[in-house]
Amino acid sequence: MASAAGVDVAKLHAAPDERVDGEVRFDPGTLGAYAQDASNYRQVPIGVVVPRTVAADVLDSGCCGLAGNFGFEAGHYEVSVACAEHGLWPAVRDARPETAVLADGFSCRTQIQAGHLGREGIRLAQLLAELTTNQHN
Image 1 (cartoon, one colour):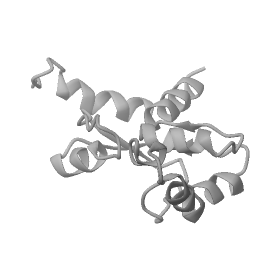
Image 2: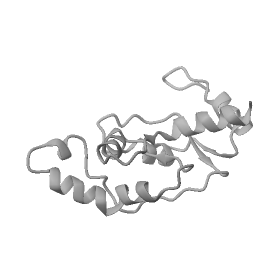
Image 3: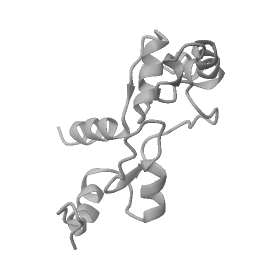
Image 4: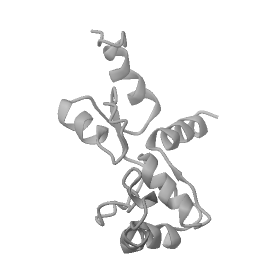
């Protein structure tokens, strides 16, 4: 079975199961949910891995406050900072040093950097790559 991108989906179903302790999802609902972020990219992933060995706290505060270029536009800075201080920035500040700060959206990663919090937001794919590399070394 191959997708339009020429990817062998059958191999994708098996490969992550061998390397990552987690559930691999290829259903349209999951793929669509993970394709949404505040950036303009909205690229649908080929598959989504939901790790079992990673504890996660998901913020329920909504937008990080940047929302594309919104936070950079004249008159929006205060609103952008207020949104970030509502959930994102305090969570990053309070996170233990060994805790990965996941931020798949470009806007959210930029907002973390703009807050001068001493941390970097990374994509889930980066964390998974690190976990699988460390698992097999």
